[in-house]
Length: 351
Image (cartoon, rainbow, N blue to C red; front, side, top):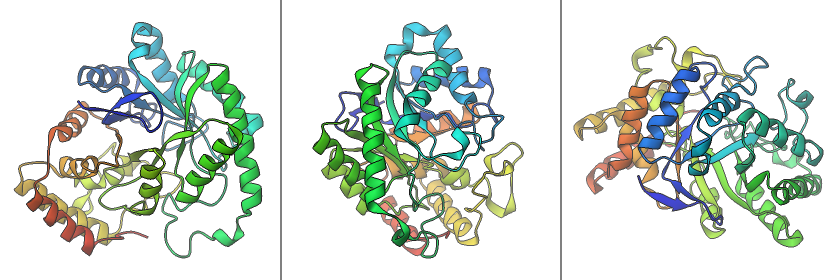
């Protein structure tokens, strides 16, 4: 496993990050324990979670993933220093989380304390804002009629951001949080947070995790440029497009217990004809090169030098082992050429 510095922080993280959002729905404590132990054995030192997990989110499962991780940490406290642990505060829209309220400075310390209690740890390595308070072109909101930025009040957004940074600063100074990061942000949001942090001597955002895969590459080149030039780590989530890039949903299949058998709050928006056509084409390329469709997809994502660490999640150990093998794979120039031909044909396969 290779390691890389996490943006402007002093943390060195593995190129693969263990995602955990199915722990508490599709996976139980025993599954999680096995995944964590295997990941550590393979050199992964980077784990990502969130207060709203498990997914699909619900009042019943809220906080369950952090609790599962906390149970493991309690039994393996001597290994806490070996792990770079990230979690997130939920944004607005979930009625059972702070009454669906925005991310506010007044809520942050309470949310941090609650996460620390569930995680059974004294500190969080990277504390992230799960999604912005304003409209965001993520979660299938990237098409022309789905995001109206003219309705955003930039002065109000800036005021709220500054309030959030001040609250995060208190948590950092108290030793509860080491670094801060973003999630599901745009280049404007990244730049604004960096500007405010510099102007007011507040914590600099060291990372952003956004969706990025062979079927969703909207962050290139604008968000990625902002990350590279500002030394902000770029952490792709859903590099397998919610599992569809594995090929398991081809020909109308929906395996029992798979992600698509659980209806999320954003619906199954990737289940579109052009997506399946693209997946079949990528699967054909993968098989011709002696790898699985999942491995091709992951190898393609992590080969970019601006990708810091790729967040992978698995419900089965066989999937985790298959996915991690991709980080030792290199795509040839010929294979990349074939991949790019398909990517150009299916540049926006769902909208």
